[in-house]
Length: 280
Image (cartoon, rainbow, N blue to C red; front, side, top):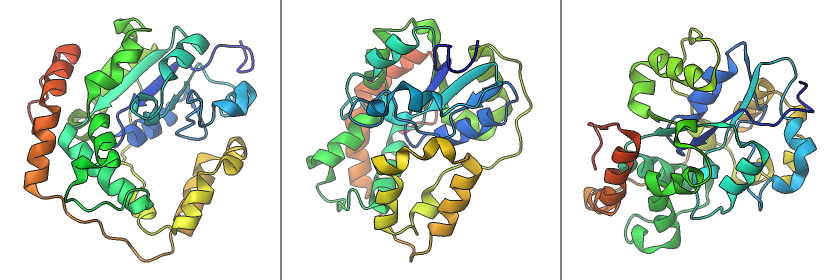
């Protein structure tokens, strides 16, 4: 069946944000059986983002000639901001395999705060952070059990694979073997690759360029731009002075851990993993 005719996607890396989804995307991109979307985060199943661009735009993200097709959009599990994603996905691809990689929820909170600061979206001082809308949204994104609930209401639990970010760092081959088993393709030797993220380039990319980069107008050109060309352009546009993010005090991190304790316990029960090195 051609890309134009088959249900898409075959699998989705749902998140968590700032937990290794870029590294997973790139490992999967190197697999000869896998056609990953040209654009890592298509955000297609989010109605107030790229869903409006339509199915032809989405299908154009995938090159023909592969056995399975997938994408990685951690915004899909940010249910405090984006609603209806699980329903849109199950309508398009009810048999899709789902993948969720979890990082220490407190570390993930810090990483997202740094990311938003560098983007210029949330220049919030640490003092009183959890009393702001943005701070509460960052906290909610670390509530993994809560984030996954809409998907578990619509997909069978067996369709969901939950992974540990620490394993991605320590044993990427073992982790990727479980990923390929889950999506039903041959195991493949993973390339030597350091953890991938765009923080370094984001820290130097001017705000106006970042906003243009993510604008709906630019998204229409995404299927025409390869991932390699996208990475080259990102590096070339990272020309500004490096921005520095304030440190978060231990008292704030303790409050974050306390606010996430109940969900972390629920997520351990859901996943069957102990996450022994987590702060919470």
